[in-house]
Length: 444
Image 1 (cartoon, rainbow, N blue to C red):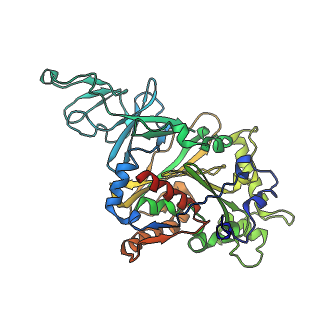
Image 2 (tube, rainbow, N blue to C red):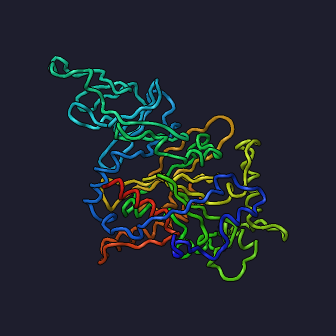
């Protein structure tokens, strides 16, 4: 590795910071695997060209594992959801034998069988009334006498591969694809300590974005943008000295909270750091005072630990890093679960089969005590609605507003660009480089 690729911020490294924590981190967070790839630029056409979008529709989405829903959204036999990705539509349904998936297309004349999520003992086409059992086998043919040439054994719904991990349901339209555990690699091992299967959907907000799905998701794959996009949090976030790693089909960034950005001049007080992290405004009630002998990071962790312990159980060790830091993973191509005890999970996908429209989704996946709460339904915001129309997101709605002000302008800029490639940083945009390296391999 050349010296240029070894260059890092002069700020304290994440590994050095967590060695000082009052409660040490799990082994997962001590792992380091810097990504090295020759790719340092990305063709503009990947974001702006409808033909490239169609290439993704041909060679990526029909062949790759992708998250479709949570198991808790289809708890009972007959419960089903509709997962759309570009021109494709998939039914995910709970059957007596587990979770299955089918292409959402009638085998008679091609109408979509289901328009939305629901519950039914079978799937009946609204057009002519052909019906199929939940497992995809043919149930009935309208005017059967007129179809002597149809073999009921073969006129099944077109199957889609389906598997689960951590309470999430994944689908793959390629029946010959590698098994999901092989695709995930070591990702389940990273998350084992955080028990994602023991979370529920506290909130689920989706917003139509006027940009390519990759433009949208790449804004949430690095902390490099904090200095200009979120300057109000610089005093309490280690943005430039975040850690970036990649393994197989997934990558990770870890951004420490409760430590000042290397961009901040001087040495802010622990009180200033604490108030920056909790996004304390002048018109808010007075923030708790940080004692003189306590670090803001330790106080943050102590406060979070006190509220979480009763929910997750006394047997769970709540380390400073797991309750304080931003630990954000990306599973290729579009699934972004956060580690630790952050509630955030993102998904990004094309919208209406257009290269310049996308759907950004944010889930709040919360731990719970006692009986599992019902999952929150998706709250859909159109392109003109602000994130603040989703009060269930709390202060994150304000942060999203800052992020998403950039994105339509990025799309417009790329569409007007008089150059062929955008350039990427060696380290801080590691996750984006990793993603585009994988994307290129899938599309060849």
